[in-house]
Length: 209
Image (cartoon, rainbow, N blue to C red; front, side, top):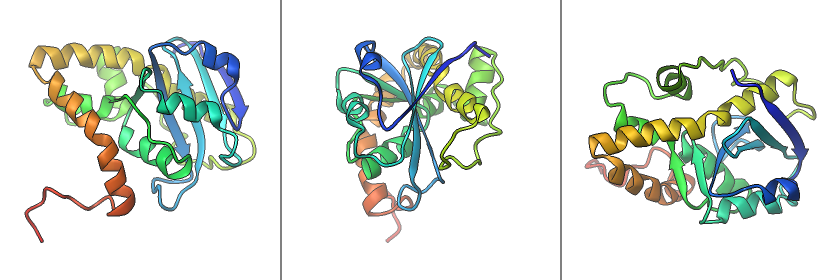
């Protein structure tokens, strides 16, 4: 585990953090559950590729101007693990569609076709030799105060994403699958809209009526 420098804010990213954002940023969310239709977005976490992690806790979404600015900036690459969920939460609750998205879960499914699992824990263990804990996954993220354990868990979900992207990109290029992965990342915006309108089980490519 890296030594983490965690900063917690309410409502929005601070302007000084925005000044340090350059070409890419790792992003993740914590919510009251796994349904964008039903569950509230509670926390969003960001990391620029070092040991610093910025958490934003929401009471409401009215003042999240800097968060929205980062997400919609197509010059900044946003690195997610399972971007489909996070991008859906942003679109549903913040009203912004994240631009320039990379998903390590999708990349893993193209690059690691030999693997049985593609969770963040699986990737960190195999590609980085790091074992991460997922004990705080099913905790109450909507409370007024986040525990130290919750903050560390949230930071862990983004702190390794830049390193994972580098490993996965190398594998994707080696296997000749990089371009196909990029096309899937581009499709995520459409997939999110389908999830939120037609439902997550709706498959436009399915043969069944």
